[in-house]
Image (cartoon, rainbow, N blue to C red; front, side):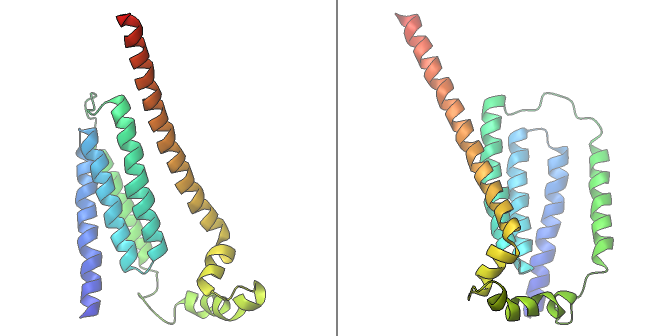
Length: 192
């Protein structure tokens, strides 16, 4: 029963992601496209969660759906909501996306079975982390050892992405506030 639920939680979000991609490619309203990219990120976070990549799922939800959406909505607020250019060949983009999806599916054929205890990672990497981490880096918590030492550059990269996105939001908000203050002072000067 649990296995069927896992498959359902994988297949339904993936189908919804496919629908979101088609709507993003054919969308003309930029606000709608930003909302759909946020929905896509949440669906991707769901798939990553079902695949037991909880840390990546949380990062996808926070950065992909949260901070990126705020940044894009802030940019749209400054630039305008509607796309004024006519759409050129939207089906080319859809075909390219489909070809990429097919290529990824072909690549998935060589992957080990889901939760396979005989997979390569369980034969080499996991035993090293569990057995040798206390000797190599003297950190008693395995999760902390993996995230802070073995995957330290990856964690640093994720932290940098979150910091950069936050700095971008602050920069957008400050620019908007400065424009408002400049506009208010010019109106006050015009009135006097």
